[in-house]
Length: 163
Image 1 (cartoon, one colour):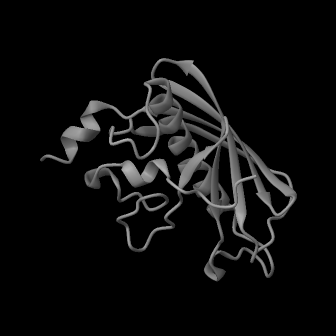
Image 2: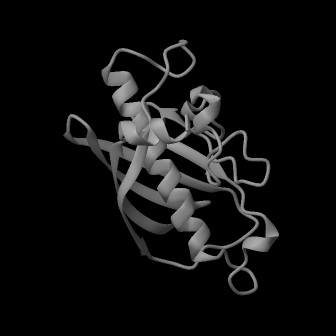
Image 3: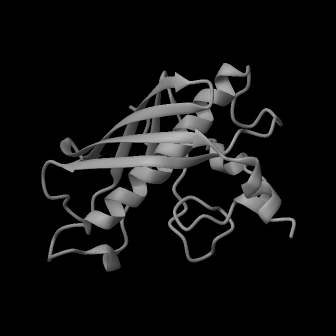
């Protein structure tokens, strides 16, 4: 299993779309989630900071939801990018996605001070929509199952940045 992401899809997002609080590389206050391929699955690895504590010893569930959200949209971008014949780092601008739905089932409390791994399996459900089935692990412990439905970012989002 991959222990770090060498080249994340977020590394290739244009600067105008690299400011997401969860995965934007240009958001100095954000989490900087990075999603890449691990074989035919996707992976995001993140070690929560101490301020994301829910109760002593455990991670706040909202952080898990944020991780799953950005992992899902990044995974959808990876899947469509690959379908289009590209891989991260090949100088082709990847497609951007937005979250259409997010469902997280918390299975066990997530211990803090352990790197989290979100492992995703992309499923194309429409030419412009993917479901990403995700498992979140803390070490060997499965803490959450999730499904994100991600849709290709509407052109109107692009127009917003030019106003």
